[in-house]
Image (cartoon, one colour):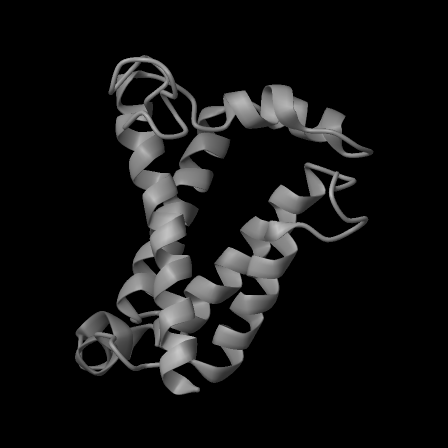
Amino acid sequence: MTFAASLLRIALGYIFLWAFIDKLFGLKFNTCKGLAVSCKQAWLHGGSPTAGFLGHATSGPLANLYHHLSGHAWVDWLFMLGLAFVGIGLLFGTWTRAASAAGIAMLLLMWSALLWPANAPGVDEHIIYAVALVGIFLSVPTAWSLNSAWQRTPIAKYLPILR
């Protein structure tokens, strides 16, 4: 079971880190779909990683709130730092609990921006991923991780929340 949980941790970390990389560079997967690689929507080229989704794709009772948050620099920075933090923490198994908690919060916010899910009332992939992250948070799977090396670093010793 530990290996399955570690595989799940790595896979979810990859999903978050890939979203960060694609939005940063515009690698033609989600960010610059159908356009040139590294298009103007890439964050490095002045694009906003939150403007498209929050500005146009939100629905439900919280849509207006998310429309107002769309494209603000502080929202872009929080979102991108969150993707990187969760992705790196889960993929490498370092600050797994903190990354899981941040990932759960991000996923629940994304879910609330799409109320109500189209395929199954109340449940979509954001909820499934969040439930998986709850399991990772509780079990902290360390197979195939850099956790033991990370625990010896000064920052991990100084900030227990990153253990």
